[in-house]
Length: 116
Image (cartoon, rainbow, N blue to C red; front, side, top):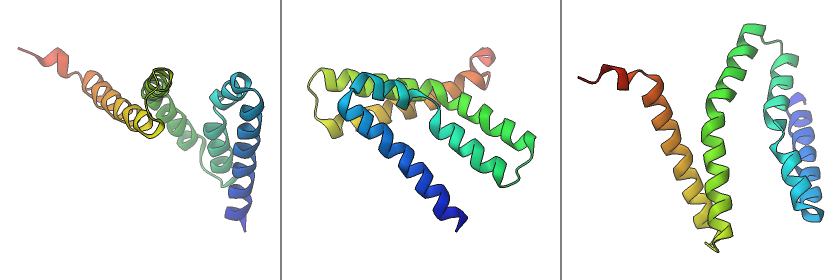
């Protein structure tokens, strides 16, 4: 039952944002950019009794994924602005997202510091 409540509330939030975006793309985008998924996930983890250190690790994971998410959004918006097909724009965005994650992992691993 708890899972059904989580899915229903999450779907309602997404539905409301989509409805707002149909009437006002700019405001819909601003609301969609809020970390609603992260906050909902954090709330569900908290109500399930997760420890605060687990919640903190979750939020650091969200921060780790933020740069690649920005790349994805930029690539998709840029592609659509230049009249690329929708699904190709999404695929390019996901590719940019993945490439950014790999690059970020490489840079944060200290691999550049070990060059000889």
